[in-house]
Length: 180
Image 1 (tube, rainbow, N blue to C red):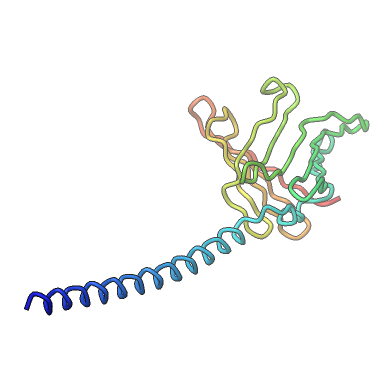
Image 2: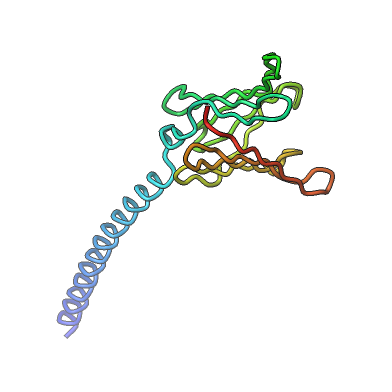
């Protein structure tokens, strides 16, 4: 009797082991497919290629009563666009305002601004938290002002804005550029 019960227990354990091995194999395959699906979803949702920002290339201007605010952008390489902002007085004197970058660094896109005479002339990074089509929003909550910078292109115009709190008060400034 003991021999039959030992055989029955061994058969049961072998069947249980086979079933468990089958479950693990199925789960591994499902996990693998889920991993691949998530990888492609994440990769395609936020590209590291600068082509996603190609729409900003060119020269953009705002006519003011005192001159022109100009911003120009160019593709530097596959992960960086470079921009310059300057003010052109009515007498054609040009005053540099800031150097700009849209750059893929450390696994994220950043809008990087170096403003002449501010922040010890050091670049300030704003992490791009949203990008779709011809629009992006970037943030740096630790910066004094602005904490948010946004760009949106509609046809031959770019609508940019800076916003945030300064001295406890919320402020926003819009820049409505047209292509030159």
